[in-house]
Image (cartoon, rainbow, N blue to C red):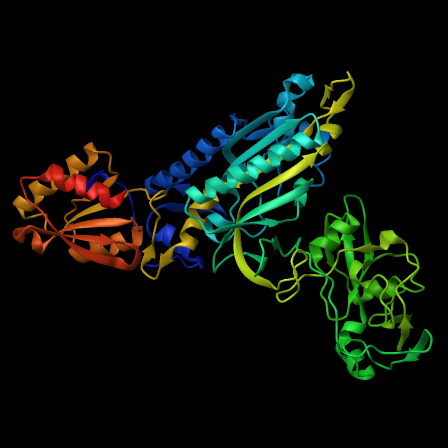
Length: 573
């Protein structure tokens, strides 16, 4: 492609609302343009990168035996109502009516739609397993779209759905997709980790996220320094914590006057103990489809409540902070809340507190705490994993230390089980002739998001640094002086030969200043450039590697263009 015929509108200034490198450089370099909040057009350069990512994803999915489909972007609301998600998904689901007052949604995900394809068509276990996928548009009406392609409203996603006769075969496909996704992200040249994760609004179990490590990552990942364990902070677990400091001792459980001691810090100082031996109450307002209520969560005094774990525990749509007035109205005593004698409210206790001895917690009476409390005789259902795992905690698998890293989610795989098939009455006959709901798996990759993720993983202060597999062009051929007729003729001949042998080359034949051409090469981020400049008269060209801007002089003969092109191909590939 000749730059004079190409469309890549570059700018010198960073957009005012762009803060991340990927957002800044993709806009400045003319890969994308913004047309609204969270809405982007892919321009020719961006589309070339997007197509390369798509091709790699499709290739590996096809090799794994999945079958590609293409479902409507618009989905009937009836399917979402049938599964029970229509009113549960929240405001991210864009609902609308057509001219006939029929209800529709713009699909943020397609579990229901894909299930409807096989319902009443796959009727026997002999027709299973089946894995269908698509690569297409999705829409989620994000409240705060930001960070460019990393959190937008309309995006391209690869979503696949598998159907099985039993859990064992679902587990087999889950492991196959784990391997397939690992191959995809390896081919994309990304430094990634597969981590334990929360299933979120999609539901299911056996959830794993694929995270690309990046300094501007939006998610916190905890990784063991010794073994392969890694988890999103929302799903991370740890070995039970211990404390070597002296435990407080009381002859028997009793109420103790603690005037104005409302915080854990003050409580620990008052009794001159480690906060490890105290119990903290965190009250949240749980929002459900048809109601809201207060729920109390108890964690160790020096721990923090992990909100996603808490939300999953009480099966709420979301948790929000409860005001002091709401606490008082419910009969709670802020700063002095405990689970002993707590009435008319749902409460849960972190599982690490089970069977703990000689603990201190609120007495549900202003200015009083209970001391010498043994956490026993509670219903087993009260104990849940509630505490947020932190850097330095102990790995549950090997006993090593956990380290925090930043990551960006690029893929997610789930075992859905029978959640959707049972709700939508999508059944098959098993080997005994018994009707059963399908066992389902769900597998997603943020294809358009990966364009930005690749930039976040590889850039410098000058611009993007594409890896070979994703770059829109492998080589930029830069002619420093288009008025030099001999050099221009040579450049054209070399360009034609490079195209002939399969090199994706952008020939910068524009009548632009040399400084502009070089700065745009650095911004656009192609892996290599070949400069036809001052050394041309002495049969020398300058070969530039974008990463590190390393330069190398190449000697050539003007009448041996084929040999030069072959040598360049060997260096590039």
